[in-house]
Length: 433
Ligand SMILES: Cc1cc2nc3c(=O)[nH]c(=O)nc-3n(C[C@H](O)[C@H](O)[C@H](O)COP(=O)(O)OP(=O)(O)OC[C@H]3O[C@@H](n4cnc5c(N)ncnc54)[C@H](O)[C@@H]3O)c2cc1C
Image (cartoon, rainbow, N blue to C red; front, top):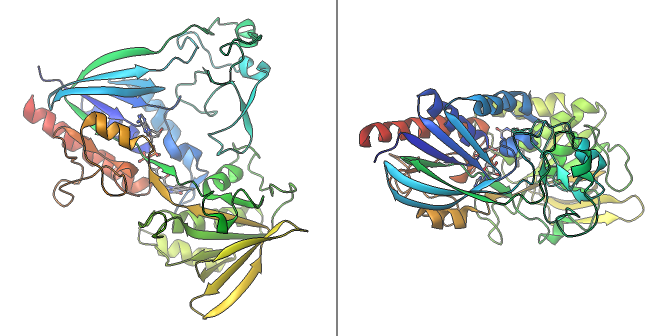
């Protein structure tokens, strides 16, 4: 039987936009997100280039629209187990992981997390700061329901505790909750699984993990964000002091035959944005961006770079630094580089270094591609066999892709591709129904 329903996998900005568009066309959508909340990477950003709009102010209304839409069923903390059938008549099995919290009872008050005795590194804050074993993924999470981390909860691990159960007035804690498998019937699937940051630890020459004041761009986004672990105050990890000189190193793992050969597409602009934001917070702060080529091809991007130079004390040096050492006394990172415009070798000391790490396809793409029977390209992005005439199609009929899971792209491009894939999906459903 043909189904006028769509499964969207991945609740970042691309999956959210595709879901809203389909739902507004009267099509039932199941939006499956593996994390406890929808929002994706955009929820981790402070502002967005090139307008410097607050990322959460744009994202949050869309997250709420998704949750409240009568045609959208949100399945968070869930993953696809299996897909059978064909376009117009697929059956998907979805595993809804146990939150150990009754979703219909939790009021999101947070009393449980306040009293929970177990602290864990906070993944949402890119490892900066800590959360509790019972936690809300981030303050504006949708749904606003708490979740218990079964690998860290003392009670679930068989130790003495039970604090959250005692404190919860809504009686929402349920340590015995089990994973559930749901079977849903859909006519088509849209993949929007996004990206993960590349692990920069193996690039030892840049000092991440060895030099305290070297952080990644995603960590920097969390640091400068008012709802982040430092409340938006820039602090050096080594001594909690305010940095005055920042350096950004571009293409860390990208465009590098030893790591990822492709361009991650958004880093020239996010480094420029982060340097501008830092200067807005601290008008005496200066930034130096070490880049290979400036990729400022979007609308208003070149102008953004020009303003960074003229109004925000941002200096650009065309160089791929060879190594970062440390001044042991000050813990300042020291960058060794060759300026390929001036043809000079240089050594410069900074208060903090930010690495624009390569952005790679979601680590789950390999398993999800197998379950769906779709192909991946040589880098692990969802392949589009007919890129020129059907840029949303995958190698399986009725399964589409959009956003960063297809190739590196920024938020506006992800939204464009999401809306376009939604309309293509609707057209296919209308044809086979
Ligand atoms: C440091 C940094 C700063 C940036 N700044 C900007 C900026 O200022 N402006 C801009 O336009 N862009 C910026 N970007 C790029 C922006 O983050 C991406 O364009 C955008 O997040 C892509 O959206 P997406 O929905 O495709 O992917 P994502 O945001 O990665 O969302 C994918 C979602 O899919 C979920 N998922 C993954 N696998 C599965 C699975 N198997 N099952 C279920 N769910 C799954 C993930 O948990 C996630 O929620 C920045 C990126 C970085 C790293």
